Amino acid sequence: MIKRRSTIGGQWSPRLIEMLESPAYRALSRAAHLIISRIEIELGHHGGNDNGHLPVTTDQFVQYGVHRASVAPAIREAEALGFIIVTERGRGGNAEHRSPNKFFLTFGHGRDSRARPPTHDWRRIKTEADAEQIARDARATKDPRAIAHGKQSWRKRQRDVVEKPVAAKTFPDTGFCQVSIPETGTESAKVPIPETGTTGSVRKPVLHLYLGEGERSETETLSRLAGAPTRPRRRRRRPHTTEVRPRPVTP
Image (tube, rainbow, N blue to C red; front, side, top):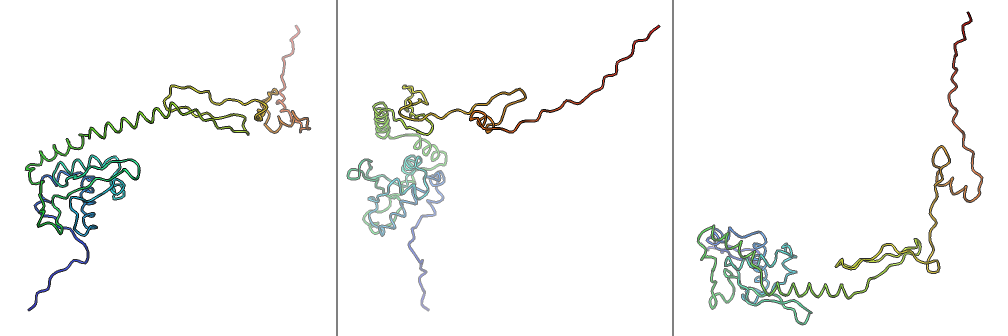
């Protein structure tokens, strides 16, 4: 009797049950799980080759479901727990200078697994408490180079805001111009600024006249100002009351 091999209809990636039960794997956050899975997908896209040279950009992590602000902490967490290794640090900048991070899966099996077998660095963590502490410290520890780059970019944006002139937008219908207030808050601008009669038209305000019994409507007020005849308003009659006075009594 011939035994048939069971086949899987598509690409697949093996994971040890020992790894799935390990304290390090159970301490992973959702973002770190997505980071590891996206790198594992990249290894499949390379046909099982280039483990250690797998490029994955930040945008690709975001498209896979990781929040942009959580990409860097999740990478540090997955690397500290022993599931990935960042073999080459990427950098931002213009198109000809930027480059993504390149990763190595410590549990990944590829075509070069015999020459470079998986290291399984996650095995060095023995307890769940140690795994949670390592993950917490890795998420909180930031790269000093990234912090310095962020401060430099912030100073550059502040200089651009100070040197940039205040832009004004004119609204000819209203007779006012809108001035954008600088982001620094050190410069003050008066908003709105009325224009002169030569540069724009000023809208006449609607007058409301008080005529004794209450305010007239806007249409009636404008008609009176223009000299147009208006319909006379009826006065409310007070109710007639008969007062009975007592007659004087004569002796």
